[in-house]
Length: 640
Image (cartoon, rainbow, N blue to C red; front, side, top):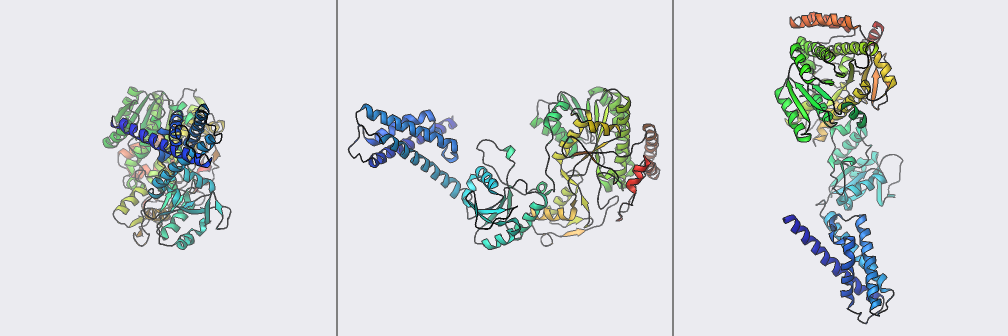
């Protein structure tokens, strides 16, 4: 009721103001036409009546002056033209022939109405929008600046100029009405020349300014204490919603452009199916559950050992997809009988196996537990899926499985080999109903459980120092949402939901999907960027301390073996490697012995058995800095 009264009051006020302006326009038109004798009915009253009648069909009284745009001004023009015609018709009926009066009146009314609305926007958005004396420098070309001004109109009055990237333009030139201040490389000098008598902000309007380019801009701006903001994602903006700028995020600094998956292909794979996600309480498993839920599966079975993380995922899904039928399953993937009961009860059609122990030093300290979970647990899940008619199982693997130096890495490589062997058997000998076993390998994901980024954030909250193992340490990084999206994309490609003949041929040879992770990121540079993003100075406000490699760590990880040639697939950012395969009977015999050794607590025997399957495994239990021995990639290739 209160909202209705407020709207009625606003429309009434607009009607009064617009008709008064119509009367003023009529008086101006009479003076401009040189007709000084009183018009019939009086010029002001006639002008007010004309605009009052003409305004309703064009709904100009319902316009929100603060957000008036191009279409609203077109409506003003139509209403004023109609008002001019109505007034001219009334004068003709009354016998007062003033031919030019109608046209002049309509033009004067339009100018007055438009100027008043524009002035109100200037006052609300220009003078009150930012407050203070903050000025804006836009990084981008003319099109980027136009998009910025359209999406963030309240900052238009504060833009001092453009900083360009690409072909040089002399300072002093203008693009889209804005002066060119210089090139991106000159940003440090530009900010210094502008002086400190005003507050400045750099707005990155160029959507391609990411990774190292954005990091360079951030460093130069940070030296002068100038904040940097980025344009919002255009896909999330609709209507006249004001576009909020956001601070530079760590994901914006990744040296790669994110790739959106093919939603149609994913929908054809997931819609109407029963889907099981193991490790659903972890960062990867939880994001898998969220993205799968968007594609309307018939049922979603969430399995994890942890009660609290599983409850958190369920609360999230309840808020976003309350109609989705969900089952929460507390279970240990190493418990054979329990997994058999789970598969028999829920009959999943697709399984995404994300459950694993992934924290490298912790698995080093508990090798038997890591091998039991990552090797034996994977085998139990895969065997149960095969027995109960699952259409496809997807194994989430890691770059640490390539030339492994840790127990965690070798355990994931053994799991890969078992799934490769299962898949090769079903593709070569089984019918179309045989279970497909797809393996997807990728590097670190930002913010995942046990990754370095949450550690740095925790250390920053405590004031530092940030601990980096080695200044040469580097890793591949990808956002959690993009990594999971590409995992689903690979699943669709590997299960036939998306036809790809080359991928199908490589899968028959034991192919493994590898996500395109871009270029690796130095952990030292990542630490510096996080300090800068927190508004602090590396080495002054927050120190960086080197601690040395931890057990099982390497300076750099590989996504594939050196002798492999990555093959493209039909999906962007998705490639395929063909690592060595082992006969299923051979891998089963060794895994049987490995499980017995682990259950007996004989870690030395278990690691020796793992090395028989993965001869390129060079264990680094003490965190010694070593390079991958030459030819290790050849060892695996030649062993096949």
